[in-house]
Image 1 (cartoon, rainbow, N blue to C red):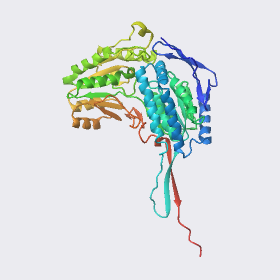
Image 2 (cartoon, rainbow, N blue to C red; image 1 turned 180 degrees about the vertical axis):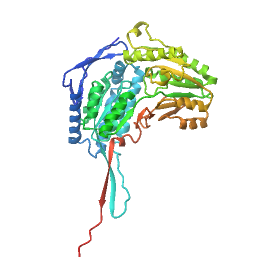
Image 3 (cartoon, one colour; image 1 turned 90 degrees about the vertical axis):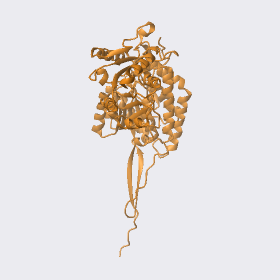
Image 4 (cartoon, rainbow, N blue to C red; image 1 turned 45 degrees about the vertical axis):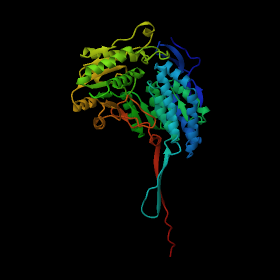
Length: 492
């Protein structure tokens, strides 16, 4: 059942809500029922350029970009507090718009609060250094904000992955323009409304919804854009990288993965099974770092697959808003069709479906975009489901005989975002972690990250890192100043 919201969601430019230059609105859907949820303003290139103009004026004309990082910190702390006070409201909105369970959405909102608090603590610690040089000279560096930064967010973690770039950019003193995904713009717009109450100057945080091909390109192509962060598909990420390279501006790209989970014969199988299930069926598998490839030793292959399949088949599907739901719907009918096509392709290429494998169509599930947790075993390495990112609750399984075999299988992908391994042997844990081609490796744990830990990948998974202690500095440019201190000798 859909829960229509009682007000439209407009663009936020310069601290004011606006339907945009064309006054156009389109409904966003509740993926649990595919019914209209709320009308949202549709921005276009003119709105993008207007937002960039307003952001540049705010950057130049307000106190935000000054050296007083402590004042920015106070505003960001207040912003985090405002969100925390309304955490349940934001979690519910995220669930209605994206489909994830309330439990997952609450966790996301908590992570957003903590991320803002973390970078707020770094806002007054953006420091330069002195550099020893020959002669009577003083040489020092200073860190300056870029100016206006652009952030293009995905639909799978609509607010969390937006704020992961926006918050450190603001902490560094930049003005930001955020473009949320067209499918899931609601929490980003609602978050933007909090900025004024937090004391952030008008125009420092702007939110422009609209089609990515038009609005996104207009933002990145704008001469006022000095940095861009993007999370999403590889094709779009490469396009943004191309646009950024033409203008010689930095780009941070997080482009997904096909992440391996390697399980050795000495692992705690019950614990591993729970972690594997969480890592692929959480958020209905719509995660850039989903553990989508299970690489398991021959001797425990059948036992581990049986354990994971038992967890998968017992998971309760339903609207994310329902307390009993353990997995919500996929975000859209198009995503549902994509996942179903991958599973059928795996079947036709020789894969054996151990559980799931067909759209959920019982009762109210038939109206939404529900696909059950699915396990595909014995698919050949050439199968699309093995090689390509599915972005759904589908786990493919491969057996291995030796450690070298496991590492080879794990690294046999164009991606390198995340990897996990399960073993009780300390030497195996450390040596295999070093050999895995991934930016993030978890040992004896499901996918986990924190605001203070770097997040980024290798190979086709992207460029640069987000989170961590260096993230605020990454939204600054370094300037070197050298001063000659020698006193000129008097003439004669």
